[in-house]
Image (cartoon, rainbow, N blue to C red; front, side):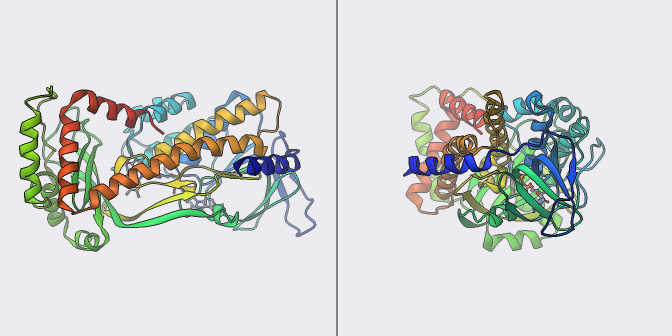
Length: 437
Ligand SMILES: Cc1cc2nc3c(=O)[nH]c(=O)nc-3n(C[C@H](O)[C@H](O)[C@H](O)COP(=O)(O)OP(=O)(O)OC[C@H]3O[C@@H](n4cnc5c(N)ncnc54)[C@H](O)[C@@H]3O)c2cc1C
């Protein structure tokens, strides 16, 4: 069946593989359907979020694509600018090793390191700053309204209807509610978690030099995590059931801080019988296996949250059934959305970029049309394998940690403590998290 699908796609590819402008900003007046001028470009990235900005930069900085015209469209009216002095926003993300390697290759890592790197909007601003060096500015207020496949290209209508665009390859990086995916009628597998992710910027009680430890505690209500930002601030991601999020969002800042401290340190959110079972089992295995020599550490005490930094996002899982269609590729959240408990979402999007660039660059080296479905399908195959496995494993972990069924809760608590204290296993899992995408 899969073979047949691939064959069908290869045949479609022949039909769609003749387009390449490789000219700079060609504008033609050739539209019989309406009087609007059409601008011809080689590659369009729609969506200037973290993944879309990095995608456009990957093309711009690639020696193989340097003579191609790349356009980055963003529907919003502004995007973040580089500055060291802005206060922290509530969205941060931890980068894994593959994402850092990508930024080094794109020449954006030094700039990210020179400012506070963890904050999402600042990472994005570094990517946009680097794009400027290749004379690419995102086109703001440019929402893709509709598109249609032509014989050898895709013609795009924008919301403002000032100009049409025609391209050989459209890359959708327009987030998990991707309208481009919908317009292409690509079905998805998705479900809501009935959970919300509450984020906030936390002010710490002490100035902690080298505040570089990320904390995560698994509670029956969902995991709570604290990612370091600076010596005085950390970022919160707290997964809570839908029924609980409104109560937490309606608390005053002082009351909310109390709840965060309680969730990190006290047992009010835990089940007492489980605590005693886990403790007894721990003392047993500590007599037979070498336990980690790491000193017991405690999470930082929170004294405040940055005003207006508290926000709640509904959580869901989504996987697009196809990541490609003729002359169309989905990357980032438009292709897959994962539970944030393992901080993998944007790293998976960067993994898409690494994979896609390897394949497209090889296509050009082979002298082929890089937007041919033969190559795009290879991207889909590789990424679906990686992403579906990751989505489902994090989904299972979330289910495991959402249950209140005591035997399961006891087993997972024991399992987690075991991993924490048995160094080789702990190192194995840390390595998996650092290198996966
Ligand atoms: C609470 C929470 C915590 C998270 N924490 C982490 C973490 O610690 N680590 C991690 O790796 N990930 C994390 N994630 C996931 C991460 O935020 C996402 O994976 C990532 O932001 C997706 O980036 P993106 O560029 O694909 O999409 P988006 O960030 O959604 O960007 C899409 C862009 O496209 C634009 N757009 C939309 N429609 C159009 C259109 N039609 N035409 C043109 N432009 C359009 C939008 O304006 C937007 O700028 C978290 C998510 C949540 C909800």
